Image 1 (cartoon, rainbow, N blue to C red):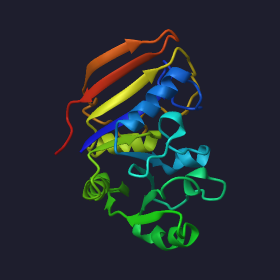
Image 2 (image 1 turned 180 degrees about the horizontal axis):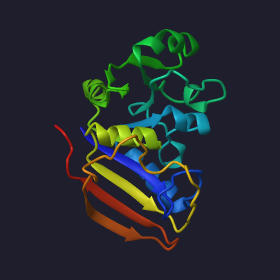
Image 3 (image 1 turned 30 degrees about the horizontal axis):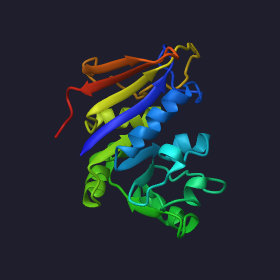
Length: 214
């Protein structure tokens, strides 16, 4: 499976607050959704807003999977369009969180337990589950802890970064990937495959991850 992280950042690497990018970047994100078989979102991102993972023109193709991952099961349900419109999403969680999520999401999502990989959930097992459903390409839409876990577990092929002409500087604000230890020794090496500049001053960069694990 080909797995891509997609993210918009400030020049100083922050990804929060949202809404920093332009309509051009929004269309780019929607086009990437249309070009892939599934999206994966961290529960923290859903807690911050009404994420829906729609494609161009607000489309919700019935054959495309929308996925959420939450180790704790702390997932907002009421008021979230994700659970009311379009095909029911897949919710990946820990075994202990399954009963509560099954009760709260009855009929509105499919709940799937994942084994642990240390202190986080196993993303290779998540990819295997999606592969069994015919998924050949996955778009990881964040946030910072999910991006870190995916890179740390070696399941990412490429990182699509929109660098916006903005600075934050806020200490402690989420960055592209946040975790307890370096991703490499000390860096995870990437190769720049493409970079395009928009009239908005945004840079659309595509990086290959050089050390994906098989």
